[in-house]
Length: 577
Ligand SMILES: [Zn+2]
Image (tube, rainbow, N blue to C red; front, side, top):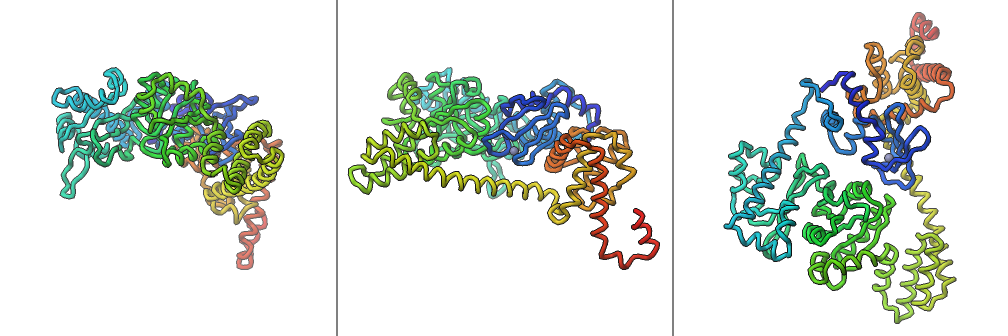
């Protein structure tokens, strides 16, 4: 899996890091750098930084960093070779013929192929006269044939092996079908079709590949939905149904629904910005994907208790990435699908335009909980409302406080002062939370170099030496003349230092992308942090020499217990060094 430096340099020059990352993160130029909200941890103020001069990135919040390849590895959840392949494809550079292990990539691509064939098969079964009842099912839902084709909807016949036979004939093995989660294994070791007598909804990723399927029963039997489990090609917590279409209409905001059928009905009615999470509650990964394309989300969950819980969770998650949340008040129907059928697209459009902000939604939910005809009910409602308003800016707080004062007869001044008291308390709690998070993050970083807390001074000196070396490889003679690997105290830094020195001696590049294939993404993150540190040093030469002195003193301190046992000759050597 070793790529040569020339290939990696070409890959790097054809994949300008700010452009590649710009497709994932909304980057703003800040002098010679770019800044944005980190895609790897939740944050509200940008600490994720891209450095065009060194073609690297670093997040000051969570300590993740590296080059364009390690970014893709993390963002797309790929291994090193796969990430290189993706960038090579993106920029039209041919991959080197041999010399890398792409078995995982091949297995994953095989699953995409199988899924595509399966989708064709399900569609052909749907339009087969034998299965007219399945097509009728879609027509009864109000779907047109155009919609069916657009989404590639299909039907899995009521058979134990129809799909299996079909794909076997195309020379896909049962093991491969099993890896794609299209067949199940019986206790006796035989394979049988997983989807049977269900209408089939293919799940397509942002790059247009069929990654999995949802299957729904045609009647009321259970389970209502059967979905592809996680495979090499599909991770349900990351995937968003219909995002491949919706991303092109995301300027109008994204409508988040609960089910596939809601989304399909909405698209047919002209709301092509509708999506759904795939059989799970919304996850932070899905939220971050949506945040790449839009700044407003309309929550369109079912009007039941589970739907209300989902709304609350979604409001919190989208709030973390600064996405505006509005809640659609779907009354008179159990879900958006039924709403459109009953009242039509225009009424749904009005629903979007009149959508409640998250604050209105929360207040309304609180109000419905209490009996405002009683004093106790009014008091509870005011308390809960004050908590909700305490999170708002003073102007919005004022507006809503007036409304609540009117509804309850409690004076506006009293409501506002309660809000202020709660806001102060929340600021204190938040500050403590931020401190704790910062502590957790630095613990996280220390995990990579577990010896650092014990040998803090030595580790910091080592880091400075590496930082200078990364930014000024021409200092290598000075460094070599004064310090060797053996002087390093912590094993982690010694490893990094020796990798860098070896590459320099071999005349190889020590750019982040060249080092990427020798180091793990975690190691590369630390290195990216050190590179940033090195950029900020005023007098790198002096810093480097001072750090070397510190390191040697620290090393000596460590050896001290043994000094008593040294021979005179050894002591003389140590003393001289
Ligand atoms: Zn981060």
